[in-house]
Length: 254
Image 1 (cartoon, helix red, strand yellow):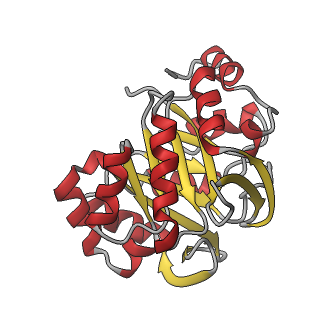
Image 2 (cartoon, one colour; image 1 turned 90 degrees about the horizontal axis):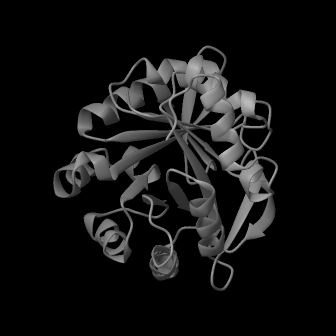
């Protein structure tokens, strides 16, 4: 059995000169958290398994900034780095891989052009391609959103997860829009339904508020990894302490 992973997420607002990490609630109410490369280095030293950078204000003009953020981070951080936001082509992905990224994450471009998932997978390998799914509950189903949660698509999240797995995605980064930043716990129903529907790893995101929530995501939600932001950014939980707690609960963590 593969070890469960703990992954800090750094939402980067690159509209601010040099780039800053921010965190919101339900994709709104943004709060400043720090410099991306500094936070990444801290998490690396604390025992994080991977780092995720998401450019939440992605545009063509700011891709160069993200490349520089990745380069600067890789000078002192030696765990896998995933980068998402504004990636729409093999060339966009190539720039980030050359800067030092290990994986790229796509959401909007994947829904708008599903063939891109297959193209990226064939070019770089499925292990390097993560498809992000930002889903909102609609009662008895979950709807995918794009453009950082600003537009809904009518696409069923469970069906879409199955599709991207078939297209060659190596992993799914699943965020519950209803739980994002609330600290009320991961959406276990959403996570479990996606995890049981696909044969690739699922990263649960959105709602972590205490150590028990991570345990639930692994045991009840069947997630392969958990991702959190504000808990780590503002030192409410240390990664080393979280891992110690999970080991005590007989969860195989790195």
